[in-house]
Length: 232
Image 1 (cartoon, rainbow, N blue to C red):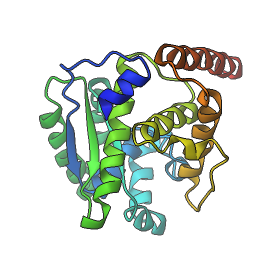
Image 2: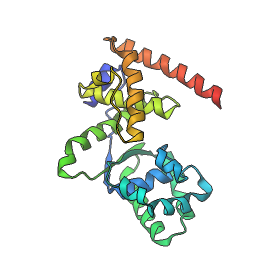
Image 3: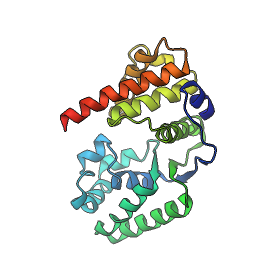
Image 4: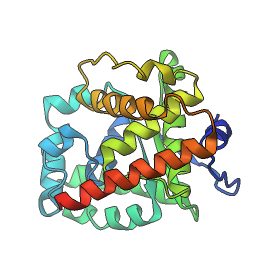
């Protein structure tokens, strides 16, 4: 399916990239994503953008009721070598000794698995009934890698997640469900993904040629990035 995306979006597919993944618990991925400053609305609420207080804020989040609910949702992300270096420096800011030790063990697993490769996908261990969802999420994360390898990444995380969500559903032949405005649910994060996938679906609806599809994406990214630059 990854090769299908590469072909249909006119992307270079480097077979030397192993697209490695590491299965972790939801708690482990949540800890990593919090330290990484992931733009999750819930983590932002608990202060994951505040690097000076990151250790205290992480501890507060892990002791909250919202965290307990968060562990029942699928979790995944991609970590790069540069991310890893920055995040390792944050471990010392965790004052809670138990959580600090747990985080050290987690990052040792990541460091061992990533080896010399550029990036590593972290994904939760699925229950039997989650297998299909697990495969879809893994594909989504690998498409993130594929897009990044081809230097296709909007500065806006919303536009970026929308594009990857659209491309994931394209690979699964389900992208047309985003051409009409998608029904929204209780998950604020998924709603953002769906709304921006809809924007890409409208833009690319009648495009049949991979070269044209890629160029339209690049043009849109340039437009979005200019808007982002004006706001900063």
